[in-house]
Amino acid sequence: MDDHRSRFLQLALDAEALRFGEFTLKSGRNSPYFFNAGRFDSGGALSALAACYADAIDAANVDFDLLFGPAYKGIPLATALACEYARRGRDLPLAFNRKEAKAHGEGGTLIGAPLDGRRVLIVDDVITAGTAIREALALIGTAGGTVAGIVIALDRQEAVDPARSRRSATETVAIEHGLPVLAIATLDDLLAFTGASAGFSAQRERLLAYRAAYGRPDPA
View 1 (cartoon, helix red, strand yellow):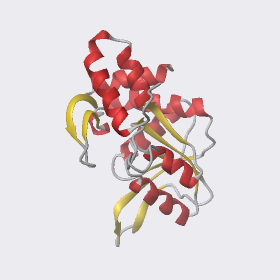
View 2 (cartoon, one colour; view 1 turned 30 degrees about the vertical axis):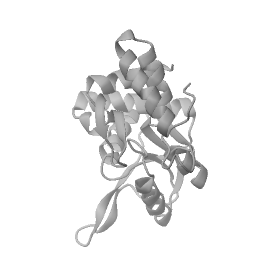
View 3 (cartoon, one colour; view 1 turned 135 degrees about the vertical axis):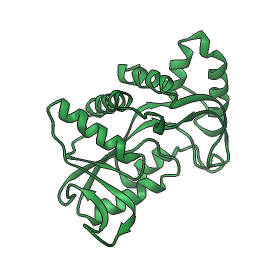
């Protein structure tokens, strides 16, 4: 496993952004694990997370020149990533959106650097149904930007409707829009990570059962 993947998973566990147990998801599914990027709630944790994002992006060789964070969790993630790239010597413009259009002051929905003519990398935590990403794609296109790709923290590799297709929400977005969708780590990586430690054996068995029900039936 690439260093940024294992580093990210350990960081998520330490921050309790990644937890094992019994969790009811928005979809109604009962999941044996839960990821909440909001638990990266300190400067140090966000800085370490941003380094994982940057390493994953650099490994994929995506060509972009602006970072975009969809409201709400994408905003601090894209901001932290912009700071990490500045630390590495690349000063990137940054933009994000607000949920409700503002009628006073600067007005509008978009905040930050102009998107017109830019190759935009969308930064978010996860893709579930893909609704927020599709909204971001529409906003960026209307503003004159071109989406170069999407990067998320964790790909659950989970089908939206496994009765119809085992294609994940992430794969669906990538295919529908012809875009690279990167993840720092995936469920495959989490299975490998938990398989490397006897202390995670019970969690791994539950992850495998969940994957059999909602993801690809043959884990890597």
